[in-house]
Length: 154
Ligand SMILES: [Zn+2]
Image (tube, rainbow, N blue to C red):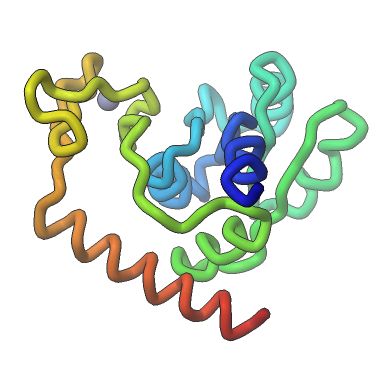
């Protein structure tokens, strides 16, 4: 049941504003479809979210409050700290585990390297490689610590 609920959340795409590009990279690492803004003015962000059917994630209260009139679902992030921002998304049902589906830079779907399934992934657009190395482990440790904190709050 829990798996199904998580998958439903994962199907919805997001759009981050320019203040939240780093959060966007983390969400992609967690398997989320997160677009970067084409333009940072409020109207353009709302237009892109609407056109692409994405949930707009922002730290801008004014932009957040104009979401409903524009027919866009919005999420207001309150913290300026990346770990807190990730927790705010986790509280909305985003699972805190690395799921290499999207390039963290360009959001393109990743391809598994031939003969190294579950080990090595490549972004066909920017040619970036993803594998379970030291960097991956330190990110996993951060996610484990966040998971721990979230369960303490419950
Ligand atoms: Zn890429």
